[in-house]
Length: 575
Length: 43
Image 1 (cartoon, chains in turn blue, cyan):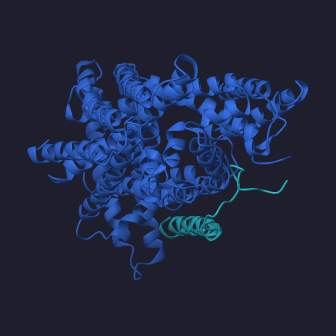
Image 2 (cartoon, one colour):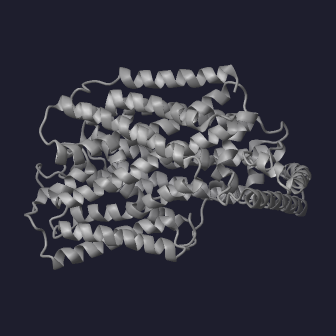
Image 3 (tube, helix red, strand yellow):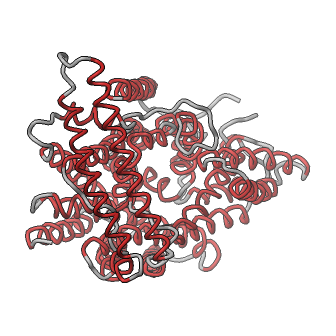
């Protein structure tokens, strides 16, 4: 990387840490450290909510997804706006006026200590591991692209993030998130501009998008009701609704964002920012991937974007076979380039319909030939290296940035990848420290003391979780499948936790036994569905929430209803 | 039981955001319609 790009990345890191620390106030009080004394404006909280959700793997992986599969992944977010409205009307005012620090605190007030404990522990374990995965994924990618040491890359993300989160608490996290969102969006816009400028002079943006559309990459919507298909309109709208309700309504890493808002109205407005902007932002991310596809139609990229396997393949007895595939790829690329140019030239009103149609068919066939060569190359790599998880989707964007973007742009986009990683990790560390101190330390180990003591313990907890996540990241870096396991574990409990909160807020007769048994049965049901069927994972959230609610209601009725008097102020409904 | 200001979910003296909720839904429909059009036009 050029020294100018290095300078941009270093300036970004210093600016973020300085911003976070400069804007933190009253962090000696527990409410100031964890909830910003409930004083933040809606726009800062809203940007923090968006920055927390947009991790580096979203930025790098989703652009790769756009390159490979086009815009269809945007359907994943269709339930989000509806979820934000439901949460604004229900849990946002509820949590705000209940004056809780964590979502799990409310569950003890409503049910019992064991329900609070199991939900808090599930959050701590899964989020602690997931934070490691959030750090590991971009660290592995950047280390492969730049040849950096993985541990160095993990520490480059981790240490500044731990430092400003530990020193400034939630205020440092939020104000850093605000700046990080500017960097992320700026980086994406820079990439889009560079991609459009990178098209040949005689290829307009519209013509390039027509070529992408010819191979299905502009097809965002799939209205089929197929529960085995990961991304359809219905799985995004219904399954995505349950996932987003759980993530934004029951996960401390997001609940804590809007608990810092200065009023219920400000908290609601902060969530509505995501409702307005999340889908357009995802379209921008995916469109970056589609534009990379059009860019690589006219500029020859590598046959496979993840090159860490090359030495091993070239040292194997199948090196000749791989070299032959590379030659075949070069020929196939030239054929596709010519077909793409012919298709572009045929997009005029004067071109006869049959000529335009045959140009399009020739282009589609040439793209299939490229995909066939890539598939055979991947298969050869998997056979040679025995890395069954080999996939180069996440390497497309970093490869484009580092090899084809001008000096200065590279630094900006690497800073954007850092920003996406750090903003998510900071929010996770802050929420992990909050749940550790409020739901475990202050609740069970040390119930009465000064704020200064709890703030000090919170700082230790932040450092502990930071080091834990970096340790998991170092371990996970060598085990791609571990990241998958961590994400799968998270998907088992998202819908089920939502079911517990539905019971708590919506079923007045529900009790702690019902919630506890319902949660266990719900998670087992999701695991059963995941392992025995091909049901897409978004639907598993629906399964979890429904099973917990039904089983929890039945068990509560059998065990005699609520063990303690439930006032109308503890639930949303008096039914 | 009628809602009171002591209920954690009760509306207090806050601005009514219903028009914003409607706007969110309208915008989502518009974005989905635009995505549908993109697929048809460029597909």
